[in-house]
Image 1: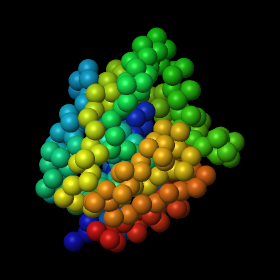
Image 2: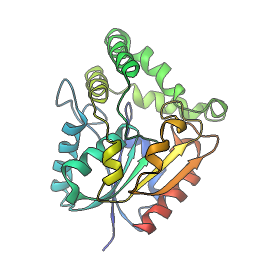
Image 3: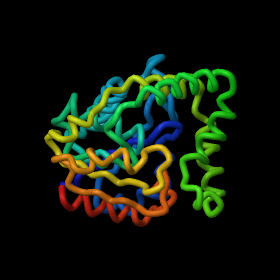
Image 4: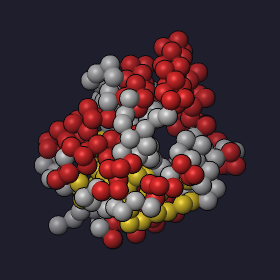
Length: 245
């Protein structure tokens, strides 16, 4: 029986973020891509979409697909949700790849920044998105990937205001899962961009050495968007992890 892979996108993204990335996996795995509420084709389900609430949503969708166990690959916010799935529904989780993500909660300054972002989005979400998407890429990659950044920005602009604010509030209020990572009942991988402006490498030290973490890939000259900035190295790291689990 083929393993199930569930790819969970990040903030301001949708299942479309994986376009062109998943071809390497579909021959050997059963691949599932989901849109979170407020993103892609799915309407918002709450004013504040907590990570726990989105974990419940993913569980419901997997039940509809009759998927009983899977390896979860969570990009950024998708990683936050994947860990909540592990806490609430451990029977669903074979393994988790934290794909440019972190188990930490927002620090006090970041919480303030989230609230400020909500106010900006409510005034002009287009300006917020046009500034947010290029920021995710390593500085040296922005010229080379100018077309790809434009495409990602155009996709992000389809995200409704209520979807953006609901997830900003949900991420602001998430709890730390650092202790959970150390005792998780399933193997965990971290794929990290050396120059990630969102998930700083030096902020992950205690997570990368956690007991449940069996695989770590640090990608040089890469920001937050490894599936675009360094897709081949990202795929190779994922395949190595899948073999281990």
